[in-house]
Length: 401
Image (cartoon, rainbow, N blue to C red; front, side, top):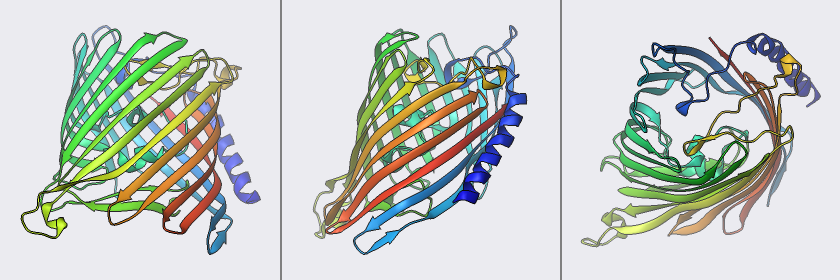
């Protein structure tokens, strides 16, 4: 454990030195979708390399018949090469490749057209379902409902409209890139965000979303799962359903007052099983509840900033007082409670409940260090249960040209 801790400190120091040189570069303008600002002629280009280097350990894992201690691992969670820019004032593109996956995976490849209050996007993209699909990574691990229930990335087209206090997004997709199902699925995703109060220091945000999905007859077996801890090899709760379509819906809430932001949402996933699974010919298809869950989180800025918000979404943290320019950077305390229940009509429910506490330090726009401590319990039905306690650390580094 001591050797691993020294390695983490040494790696953080190396990246601090590299990021110190990179911090002199200007950060991209805070514009919708994080695209770089355009010059007067409408052209802007940005090449970005970023990586998440994670250190995870479980200090105690207890089950009815075993106690495990000392599970540890290092991993490169993400290593991205991103090229994005504007071809004109109204036309932008993005290409994002993840080199940490095997095989190499293209995360995003899309073209966006902007109007005065609209944005049309076509290509491979993240499905904008809710705040959970717009995570700005204040936590080392995603919430359980995002991991188990969200649609992930898909290929298709979406259109967004914006008003002074609202934002609406509708997308039609054909084929999953990341998510539960394989190719051949069809889905629609829609979201309504309403923010009657939004300023630099205050926010009231409400949202609702829904997403039906249809699966091909050749592949209607879908698995929904999430890990119980940071460890990639840690136990997971999982359910596999035979469905011909499912429906994801949920509600969301976010409040900001000065340096404090409270965010939460609840999601539910229902499915429609083929008639043949009922065991009798001619019987109609039946509806099944696949899963449901909630999370609530709080973020407190120890250095006094407020969380950035723009057109129905939180945006990347901008560090105005960089550590490498003699400032303190940005410090956050974070806490989250999340729950998930995966159901099956023929078996006991599987449940997961976790508490996560952590601290984030944004040394500059290019470097962030995070440490999380998680305590949780999951029940796999009947008398099977497991308690976990562990920590996760992340070094987030990026460089822009």
